[in-house]
Amino acid sequence: MADPQGFLKYRERELPERRPVPVRIMDWKEVYEAQPVDQLQRQASRCMDCGIPFCHSGCPLGNLIPEWNDLAWKGDWREAIERLHATNNFPEFTGRLCPAPCETACVLGINQPAVTIKQIEVTTIEKAFEQQRVDPQPPDRLSGKTVAVIGSGPAGLAAAQQLTRAGHTVAVYERADAPGGLLRYGIPEFKMEKAVVERRIRQMEAEGTRFRCNVEVGTELTGTELMRRFDAVVLAMGATVRRDLPVPGRDAGGILQAMDFLPPPTG
Image 1 (tube, rainbow, N blue to C red):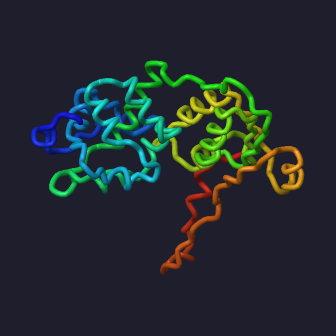
Image 2: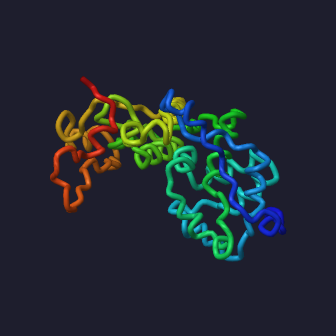
Image 3: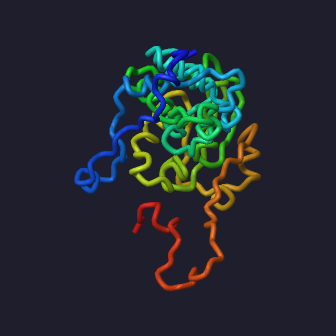
């Protein structure tokens, strides 16, 4: 486990500093500064390696959180990213965007602020990219089977990556002009810069995943055609239907849907 006395020595959460407002208003880049590694490792040392780690059940992916907390505390970033990638294809996405139910489930949170799990996660993957440990993993041999993945959001990308690494020939179909789904067209730049998505797409292309953009399945390409061309089809479409709220004033002038403003204008 991490430092057995860590949660007694360090009782408060430490998070990265926000970039100064005069600097932030000059661009659309992410809000937070990089966190000093020693500060992050202090936070990792607070993990108690609980007998029943409720953070596991709190995490929808079942991330092995106490394991990579311990490795981050020790500074073993090589092994930490291996344990993180064991359950999570894209920790650079979840480490930035996930609402962190793992932290809500953290046992330490009973009488102290929870461990900063999400920040440890994103730092681990960024360390791995910095140290060039996130290499393409093309399959040793091809299965001869072909798979179409419809939709290039996080679910479609994860399915495509796993299928490609298993040796299948995978084509990802996306109706927009670039892959990523809401990661690209629904997440503001200050939450996650598009370069983060591009970086992972390049890795997937190097592994052999093919991307077919500007193709709307169901109109330009029918389901029957897909079934004829491919051995299997994965449906991973996102929901672009806006969630409206029946609240007083909703129909007043100037009340607009945010979804209309997230994608960049195309005209």
